[in-house]
Image (cartoon, rainbow, N blue to C red):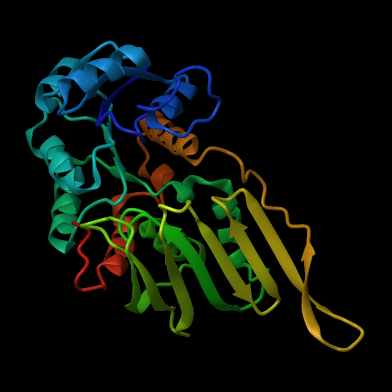
Length: 328
């Protein structure tokens, strides 16, 4: 059994979970527990009472408000960093520089860090310690997007013409998912990102922007439409190809392929057609934990391909193209 220490006892860790009744693997506790090779051995939070409550409710035997003491006590194989966004760098650096014993792998929530200096530092320390940092850009673990990536590379949909997306809750906190999905699926990089609208949703540090950008050498028009999540949450992608339109709506609940059809008037319209993107409903977080297990079993970094910090770095640099937004 591989020992896991969870750092940060909030929502993504599983604080609001019923721990047993729900079948969804949408938090760290549930995902690790669903895999029979892991033992949830400890949890850490700056709020000792919160850590103790989380430990009791989740059935985790050890809790603490001191990261170094927790690592020395638990001696984890995996440290799962689920702290607030702005603390990701400091917590991860502390693990790499001050922890004894060192874990075998770090599972870090997005966004990975706040600026280029932090990214460079984490990459250097990770290499020096020979400890991979895997980033929970969760859609990279999703069969839906893995299959879409394969289809895109084989040009099943024709030439990409335009992308429109809609998100909520901060350019760095949530917009990072869309930037990373598009990079992952297309293999292309962004240029000339510019803010055209700022959504006033109450966020003070990580603003929700509407952003226009260009993708790849062909400068494909790409839009990130910001939305005020105080009304309700939206997470949609709309890919327009030369052969039709692919829409992924409401957090992947609906996936629609609309193919070009010429009607009796000779007009080119779109008509919905069946599309086979298997595994769309599987838990990405659970699949991420499976990748961690495969690495621990084999010690082969190849099983972590496409989800290491090295690959996520360009996603962060794309976010930072907005000079006034450093994900702080």
